[in-house]
View 1 (cartoon, rainbow, N blue to C red):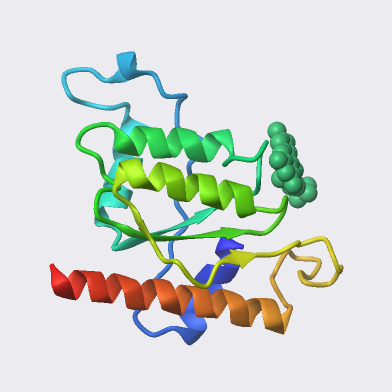
View 2: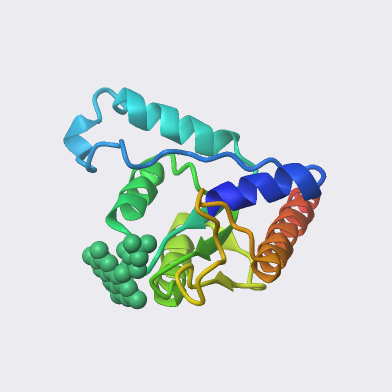
Length: 167
Ligand SMILES: Cc1cc2nc3c(=O)[nH]c(=O)nc-3n(C[C@H](O)[C@H](O)[C@H](O)COP(=O)(O)O)c2cc1C
């Protein structure tokens, strides 16, 4: 789904550049790994990428009514002082596993992190049903789903620009 957002933004949305940020390789959060105010190298790199971004697009299925542990771990590393999420605008996508509960939980976590989520449109889909929304290479090909994703990205872009203008 993030790949689809990258492609859509490249082809159809002027001024929006979406970049995939790897979170699976971050160590499990352990504050003992913070030494003299420094984080492990992978964490420093991740935090820098977030600091440089104007807004954040999160992707997660429901995992036991919440976000995946990999995403929670990334959120937690980013939250260590100074909190790199603070003041960023955000949106969320889910391709499988419902996603609604993960997204509402993510919004709740975002309250403490000072993330500002767009309210609408929300974006969920079931990548498996009906079949055919993705091709054999894993590319999103369903036109209606692409339109929905584009609307969500445009809303995130507009909200981000509005917030930045007021700062
Ligand atoms: C630990 C774990 C917890 C899950 N919890 C939920 C859940 O609460 N609700 C749900 O609809 N799916 C749940 N799922 C299913 C996933 O959200 C999702 O469908 C699956 O991991 C995606 O893989 P797939 O693309 O192979 O289907 C869970 C999966 C795992 C591994």
